[in-house]
Length: 84
Image 1: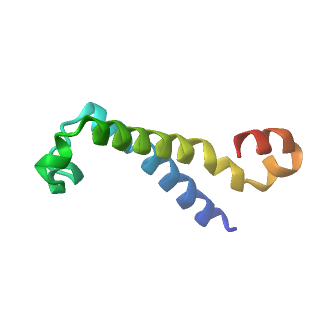
Image 2 (image 1 turned 180 degrees about the horizontal axis):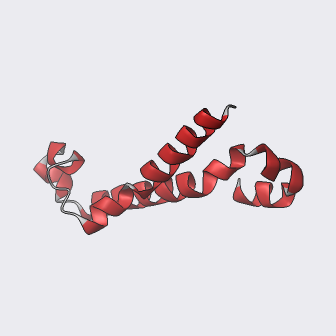
């Protein structure tokens, strides 16, 4: 993978990985949550699963991008497997 593509990949992985913080720090009522029906938003389990999903997805993106670094796979295969 070329250097430019690698930088773009890492940038987007980190940027999208940090996106779930927006739901905690900023009122995101006008975003995805605004498109959901009121009866869905009224359910506590829906909020729990939504925030769990976006949080773990963000963590996966933040921790997962090094998996694509050839140097990590070759020099530290144990760390590569642990992160994976």
